[in-house]
Each structure stands twice: as structure tokens, then as C-alpha cells.
Length: 85
Image (cartoon, rainbow, N blue to C red; front, side, top):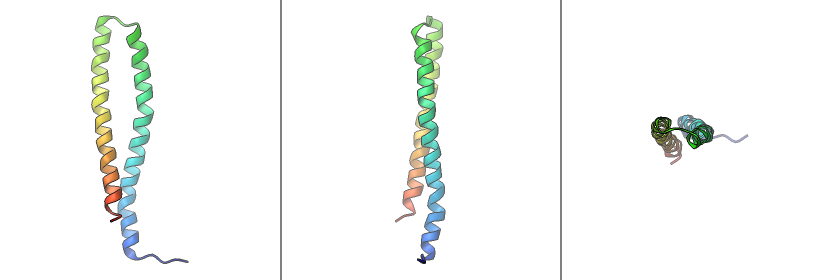
């Protein structure tokens, strides 16, 4: 059985939460985007002007949420990769 130095276990313990943060954020982002975009595309095709304005606000809000999730994803990758050095 191979024995690992204590620094390996410390790096693994510190890097694994970053990996989990990345994994769950990426999964949520990939799951939410098609659902939201498909719903808005169908609604916008047959909508009146007032409804299209509401949809524009919803799309802009989701764009901000998606950008925040991408930043969270990058932080997770940074945490995950920074301990391996």
C-alpha cells in the first residue's frame, strides 16, 4: 500500500471543496440555461410589446445570474488548482 505525505492529504482536503464548488455550479448553470432560454424563446415568439419588455428584464436578470455563476465557477477552479502547486 502506498503511503502519501501529509501535504498530499492537506492539499486534497483544501482542494476538494473547490472542486465541488466548480462541479455543482457548472451543473446548475448547464441545467438552467436551456430551460430558461427555451421558455423565453417560446414566450417571445407570440408576445405583445408589454410582455416582451418583461421578458427583456428577465433575460437581463438571468444574464447577471449566469455571469455570477461563472465567477463562482472560476473561484472554485482557482481554489481547486491553487492547492496542487
